[in-house]
Length: 127
Image (cartoon, rainbow, N blue to C red; front, side, top):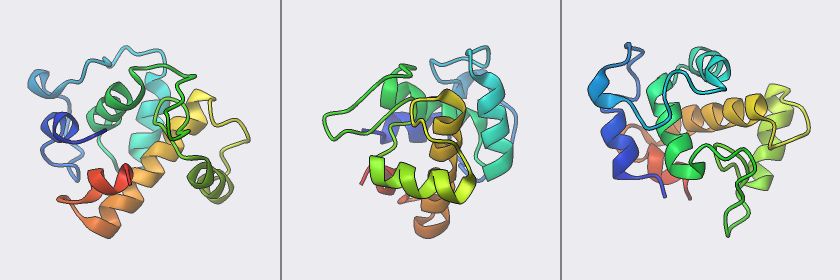
C-alpha cells in the first residue's frame, strides 16, 4: 500500500523540482529503467522521485510482481486499468514491459492527482 512512505518521498507531487538527497527513494536515479522514469515524469508531469517511490513501495523493483489483487508489474497496475491506459496512451500489450508499465503508472498517478488533489491521489491510486 502506498501511503506515508511515498508522501514523505514527495512532499509536493506537483513540483517538477530536482532530486534532493533527503527525498530519494530506495530505487535510485541509476535504476535500470531510469530513462523510462524520466520519460514518464516529463510526459505526465509527475516527479521522478515520486515514480521511484511508488515503484519501491508497490513492487520493490520487481518487473514481474503480481499482487494478491492481481495488480501487475513495477507500478502495480490493475488489469482493467492497464487495458484502458494502454489503449489511451498507446503503450503496447505487455503490462510487465517496464516502459509501458511505468508510463501507465505515471498516467494513472496524474489522473488521480488531477481528480483528487494532493491529499487524496495516493489513496485513489491504490483503490
